[in-house]
Image (cartoon, rainbow over all chains, first blue to last red; front, side, top):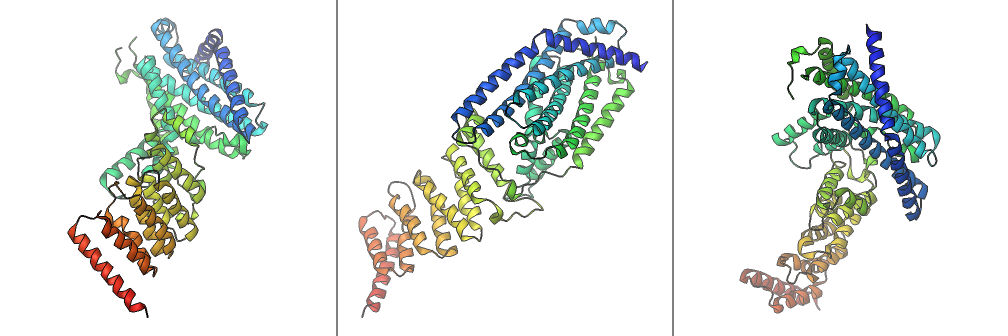
Length: 260
Length: 238
């Protein structure tokens, strides 16, 4: 039974990747890559010193945000289109369980996300050292993987582009800043014992428990300082596996609750 | 869009949500809280970068940066002595915050009241000089931090000349700026403490003669003080 569902999920995934190729997503991303490259070269030309370092940091930062933006918008818009075109109803009218559809879509978008991460790594390969770049690219792939899971969860919940995209952006921004927010709430110069401060601190700690710390992922410093990023990867992998499992399970929960 | 009851969801999916949620909370709970360390204070970003981050509204960025910097001073359970901080970086952060929000007082308060408390004269002087340098941009609003700097210079650093420099800057910019007279009179008393009684007398006499003082009690107090100085001077002279 399971291999049959796995085969169905793989078929859905294959068509999801095919759709991304045929809608020219990778060509669009290549254009983004070229623009980021031009921007990096411009920044390098402006720099008085450490031009190549500046170029790598600028390019890495730009590509990371561009990849997050592109994959989240693509995942959301492609799924919403499928909902609106009643493709989901058509598929589920066949002998296809919702879980196989959900897993298949997730796997397909994940392959697309890993492709974008590979493109980013290739774009940086001209100016960044090999081993740190590989670690950076793997970390980006994990980060995009979580973004895909979050996008699928939001689109299964809201079924519309705007609210889903807004929540994904909030997730990414909060995930990147939650560490700094925790730091700030933990260090009031005055009145740390006030009930308001304690309530705020407790709330932020509770939110932090539900979020991955995205600021520990895909750091530009790995590329320019050539610091050993490998020891950082296993905890990041564990974090992304847990977050993806949670978001995917939540997405399936909402998918099963849809009244088609 | 209508939704079916959650009872329609397969139990395996419900179990997966529960297990994954527990795993997520467990994983994050076993990770240490982010802690500030003195070494971790990064270099201040360029002012243009911060302005870019603010997307045309620099004030929220300035306040966010001030709170961020503050996180490196004071952590529960962790004592980061101020002298462990790189004061070049601290000063750069304060400069940026003040550049973004020139009307704000927060960075000047932090420099004069927090960072200048460190028992390291070099670092204290760096912070006081920061307050002094930025005072001239807006004396009407920033005089109180320079007045505090003068007190720190006199009593903590034991450097009355430095205190006098700061006090003279306030006095020189006090006209039409709503700076209270006690602040603009500081050079007189510092000079007196330095043994420069003659200069103090000249300054105090000039102040009384200028007619800028209007409070009769204040005029009476300062006139008595001038008389005491003159008396002391007469006794000292052979």
